[in-house]
Image (tube, rainbow, N blue to C red; front, side, top):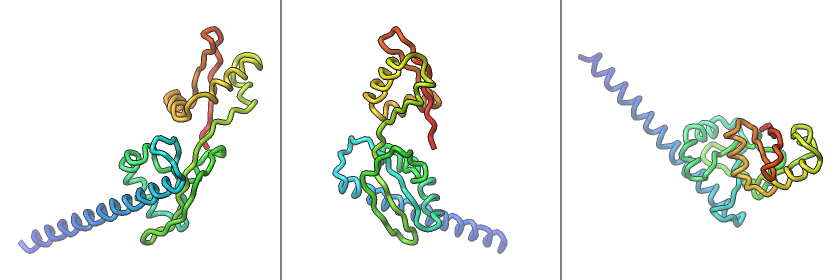
Length: 178
């Protein structure tokens, strides 16, 4: 009887600690989202502005990474995008705003960035056609919404195929995410 009671108490304590851990993670996620929203206002952005939000831990970052991973779907729902580690930012990302924060035992920087498309001449090698075709492809890519292009590249596993004027088929364009 005593063993069974002891086992039940142990299970209750474990459940209680798990619940406390989840509650703390939830509160930290809310704090993180509130700070991102304040930074969004500081940058004078509209809710419809297409931006990416990055974070960079200033300490070992283990706790912050765990919270971001465990609360990923909630963060995606709130921001419209995942919260991305700064080291994953593309080199052409334009940092609009950044701010340092200390929350409990975590120290980190939040960045808001706008990605602008960059089409370089090395794309010509991968695209079928002449220089004029490449220039037309460049105009097409630069005229597209970043979010739509991003979705098309993701859906195409890093590739898209473009037809110009319905006559010319410009080969697959590949981008590498660093």
